[in-house]
Length: 444
DNA sequence: TATCCGTGGTA
DNA sequence: TTACCAAGGAT
Image 1 (tube, protein in one colour):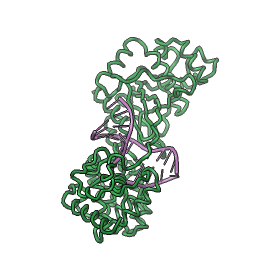
Image 2: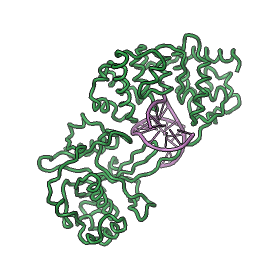
Image 3: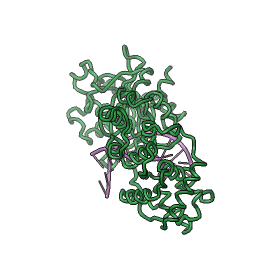
């Protein structure tokens, strides 16, 4: 690559950007805090998805101090539905670092910015270049795609080493004094023209010297190895309906401090024995109108309830849910009917949620007869023995200990009864948001 | 280095 | 419907 060709690329691209750039909320000015928030929200997230979240977030937390001093629950609630929730917690931690160590002013040196929680190589480059116009590369997926095509680079962009290589190339292309615009131009081109599936070479401002296109490789570049497919998990969830003083409420729980969906709220659920783990509960034949969110599904649950018992598969699952929730959380519930199915897709896991309407409290064998109406006690006990879930001597009883039955249940600290109003305070992942909204819509 | 982290749009 | 993947970071 000659210097003149590089100059051509940079200046043609920069001119195109200045004439075609989108008007976006974070392009109002170059306030480093606004740029920072936008870059974190835009991590692995589309512009159109981010915009309404960004507007709400900046409205609620206009300054670094506002964000740093806010209750964490409010920050999470503001992020609800956007995904990758550690971003929200790290962003607030970063704001607190800036407040305590930099007098509330975003530092304008690379090392300090890169040291902030949730700020990696891309985001530090983006903040330094866009907010401070420093000549730092900001290499994201767009930039790797654009440069892989333009310079016909056949490196696997899934490998971290490739990003490092492209960072050096991108740094060398930054025009004097235009780092912020140039970095945004690269990303804008990737988002609007040099798109993953069908690149718009005919309207591309740098098509004449694009080596990838000239080699007819615009559709095969960039090279990227396939990601591992997500593992399926069947999860048995309890929609626990309150009675008495808790009438009209639902029992929810908060997830642990770290890991998947950290600190988010959810319906209690347990991991079902997975297929292949040895005589496991298989999910009912899924698909076709059985999803809780579909209009026709609630009907399926009603039919099951009215027929005086659950389908065998659901009976087995309900029983397993009841026992496991008792064992794991010490929460005693009585599933009374299958309510529906919902799917939740993560990057690395797919949840098949089987939702069971449940009552709160201990149960006895007689109470539980509905669980075995379809499958028969023999089938259920055989299943339970196979899973070694309780002592064979209890096989005929299907009940928990008498002490547990009699005791007044105390809720674990991470459990809470909530009504519709509490939906405005607690942050839920989207699946549970939909399930709860659907429940309250249909019970008004 | 590989895996863990959400969610939704699109072809 | 599946498959891809988006202004990535932490461990």
